[in-house]
Length: 554
Image (cartoon, rainbow, N blue to C red; front, side):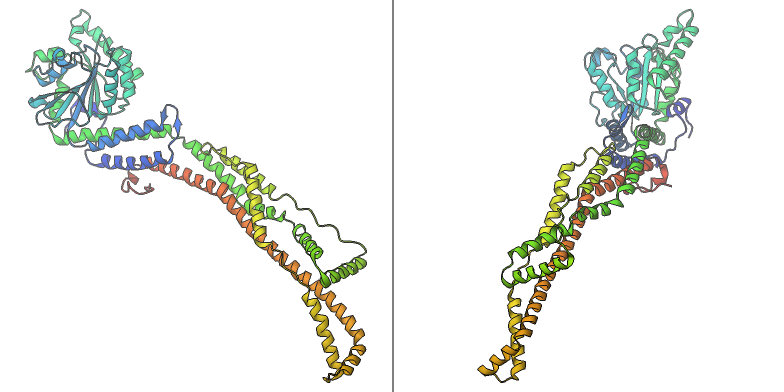
C-alpha cells in the first residue's frame, strides 16, 4: 500500500497494520496494572505512579476505540485560521467561527452524517454530507491561548483521545509560550501529528518573502523541538485562505499532502494502519515512562539488603530462642519448689527428710549452696529481634519497627505461660512411710512364729525381732523419703524441660510473625515487582499470555 510523504511523516516510520500492536497493548495493560497495584507509591523524577496510571487508562481507552473510525483534532491559538483550514479541506465553507462559537468553551465537532457521534467528546456538533470528510471527524478545539483557563482544560482533557493531531499557528503566534506548553503537556510522543504554519501567503507577499518564510519555518522547527518536545515530522507552510479560494485545485495553499492523506483515509486498511501506529506509540510512551520512573536500582538494592539481612538473622533466631529459655535456670525453679515442699512436709516425711539432709551435710562437710536467682528472661533474644526489625524498617518500603519493651513483655508472658502450664506442684504424702514399718513388722513376726499366732508367740517374736525391725524400718523410711523427693524432682525437671521446649517454639513463632514473615513477604514483593517490570520490557516474547500471573519472557 503506497503512503504519501505526509503519511510517512505522520506515522514516524513504517507501521504494521496487523493486530500485533493491539495484542502487545493488552499485555502491557495486564502487566502494567499488576505492577502499579504491587508498587503503588514509587516516583522517580517528574514521572510518578499517578501519571503512569493515567497513561494506562488512556491506553485502555485507545484499545476500546480501535474501530476504523478516526478523529482529527485541530489545535491552535486565537485567529490562526483553524476554521478556514477546515473549510479549505472540505472544499466549501462549513465553518464560520464567529457564528458557531462566539463564546462557548466547548469544541466544535464536524462529522459526516454516516459517522456516528464521537464517544466521550462533548461539544457543538456540525453534521455534514461532504464526501471528502466522510471517514473522519474533525474537532476544532477552543483557542487555548484565550484568557479563559477552561479552554486549556478542555484541550488537555481530550488530547489523548485523538487519532490525528494537527497543530496550527501563524507567523504572528508561532513563538507564543502557551502553544508549546500545551504541546509539551500533551505527551503525544510519536503519535500521528503534524504542525502547520498558516497564512504563509501573507509572508510571501512581502518583498523578502522567501527569506522571511525560510527564517520563520526554521525558527518554528527549533521552537517545536526545544520547547514543545516535538517528535513528529518537520512543520510545513500552508495558506488555508488560498486553498479555500481555489476549491478545484487540490494542491492550492500547500494543502496537497493533507488532502492526499484524507483520500488515503478512505481506505479502511489505511485507517487501521493509523490506529495501530498510535497504539504502538502509546505502548512505547508508557514503557519509556516506566523505564524512566521505576526505581529498579533501588528495588534491587533493597532486595540485596534484605537477602543479606536474612542470611544474618534467620540461622540465628532458633539459637537465640533456645538461649532465651536457657535463662530459665533449672536450679532456680526446681530447688526452691523442693525446699518449699519439704518445709510443708509433715510427720514421718518431714522427720526422715531432715535426717537425710543432716547425714548428707555431714558427709559433704557443709550445707548446700542457696539456689540461684532466676536471670532476666529473653532480653538478648528481644534485643536482637528488635534490632533486626529496625534494620528491616530502614528499607524504604517498610515503615514500622518493633517496640523492644513490648517485645520483652510478650516474650516474658510466653515463658511464664509455658511454665504455668507444665510446672505443677505434686501432692506428697507420708502414708508409705507408715506402711513400710508395719509391713516389715508383720513379716518378721510371721517368720518368728512360723505362722502360729498366739499372744505368747507373737510377743516373743516381737521381742526377738525388735532390733532388726528398728534398723530396717528406719533405713527403709529414709530410703523411701529420699525416693519420694527424687520422683518429685524428676517430675519438676520433666515439666521444666517441656516448658522450655514450648517456650522456645512460641518465641520462634513470635520471631516469624514480627521479623521472618515480613522479611519473606517483602522479599517476595520486591521480586514480584522486578519480575513485572522486566515482563513489561519483555515485548512480544510475553504477549502470548497476557493474563497470566507472570507472563514469561524470552
